[in-house]
Length: 174
Image (tube, rainbow, N blue to C red; front, side, top):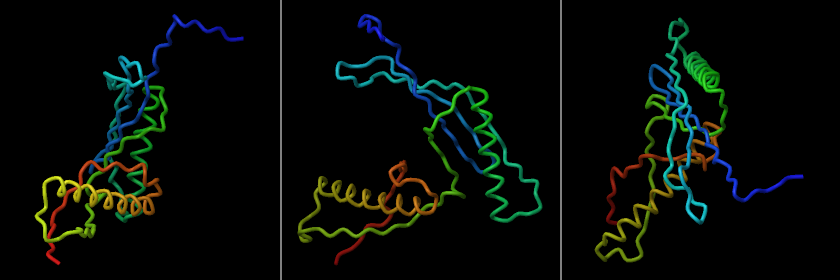
């Protein structure tokens, strides 16, 4: 039988996540927690604080003679697993939440085209319409890229977060 004491409040538990940065010569990892210092009446958390519990660094071992694509993937996997194992041993924490940073040589820029047709092409584009067009195009591009990477990497499309998207060329008078 459980007793409830409303005057005793349980301290909020931190939510752990792993920040993993795969660079061109090393893998860096931070084990962090997201801790709410206070909450509002509606249950929304305010004043969140990120606490770093541990760090790990592993350089790639490139001393092999077999310099093929499969060999590079194995080196990368080995360094990632070693870094994760090291940080989990140091912090005694395991989590399934991950923030991942990839270098340009692994995750290259993509060129994606997206068409958008205005209802009235004779009118001058207002600032509000320009923002709406950008938002529509960016959402479609994100959807396309997420699907492409999901097929290639085996990660769910909804797990991708895009930190940077740019429209490089936007011309058409048709």
